Amino acid sequence: MFDSLRFNPFKFNIFSTITFTLIILVIISADSLLSNNLSIHSVDDENRSNHHELQTHKASEPLKSTSSDDQVRIKVTEKITEEKGRFPELQLFKSTNLTPKFDSRILEFFGRYQCKVQFFMTWISPAESFGRREFFVIESLFKTNPAGCLIILSNTMDSGYGYRILKPLIERGYVVQAMAPNLYSLFNNTPSKIWFNDIKSGKTDPGEIPLAQNLSNLIRLAVLYKYGGVYLDTDFIVLKDFSGLRNSIGAQSIDVNGNWTRLNNAVLVFDKMHPLLYMFMEEFAFTFDGNRWGHNGPYMVSRVVERVAKTQDIDFTVLPPMAFYPVDWIRVARFFARPNGQNGEIWVEAKLRHLKREAYGVHLWNRQSRRFKIEDGSIIGRLISDHCIICRHTYSS
Image 1 (spheres, rainbow, N blue to C red):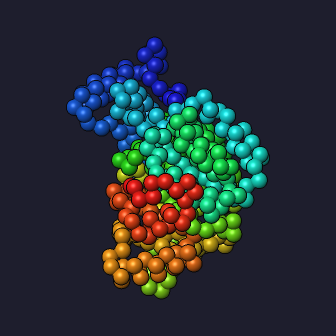
Image 2 (cartoon, rainbow, N blue to C red):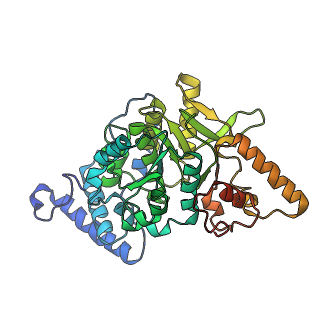
Image 3 (tube, rainbow, N blue to C red):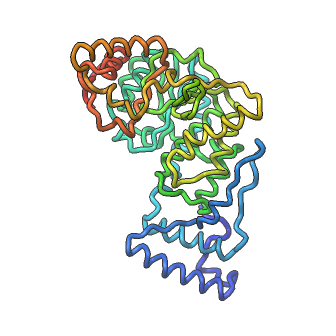
């Protein structure tokens, strides 16, 4: 939605002659660029560089341009870009007929069931791409947390097709439902609202990283802040009961002294309205960079926790890599491969015992592992066999 600065062709009197000329030039220039298949960005790089590190926990006012002509140019360029189909990511913000009911649905959901643990996932891809691995992740969740409840925040899965995917688990009594999130209400009264408004208005450049990825990074923070519980990525095999965890985030790596060097946001466990979640949303909104992978995800939570550890006393725990990330993305291929000879068998058995004893789950690093086949006798294959409910297609990719 565009604000009062949006170009209106029936109100020329509100613009100066210079401004109107500028608009025409922008339209001509933008159309020329589009015809040559070049990307048009709705925000200047200079605008993006004005975001500063936060010094307090109170959200600041969104930064504004000092030039009304610049604002008009941004609106017009974005308008043209959207109409030409060059800005498809904005489709992520479209509402469905179920979107306005999100708040009442989620409260009714948690009111109806006595959830031992409230789990959340996000799915911003088409429902048709929700595959066997993703389904098994949900199986593993309920195998280890049968009294838990799962909400999948997704427009596409909140459909007849999505229901058919989840139906085998629902028929077995497990509490899982996909819900189309109302981003307006979810982000309201949080620092997330600032970023959301700036993205929609064109004040913030979404960058080269898929907007869906960064939107998922933010949705998980907002939903935990408003409702509390556990957020899981859809490529995380659950191996333990999560009911004993509170206010926890996992280290992805540590140094030789055992101090964490990087955290990750693929698994988050937090109480409702936890202050660290608020700080994460502040950092996301005011240091957003859509051109650097991980900047608004793992690197973002790492930056905030590093600052908090030095300056404040907040109740949360950083768990060691073995808790959520027992295998690094560089070495994850070994978990998918069948054991090589007797030594390989011994290694697999030892690793499985270690995982059972120490790990809450295994992050599969789908960005790297999606091309790997789950081979017979592999660690992942064995975990699936031990933690599935319906137990079909164990060794398919």
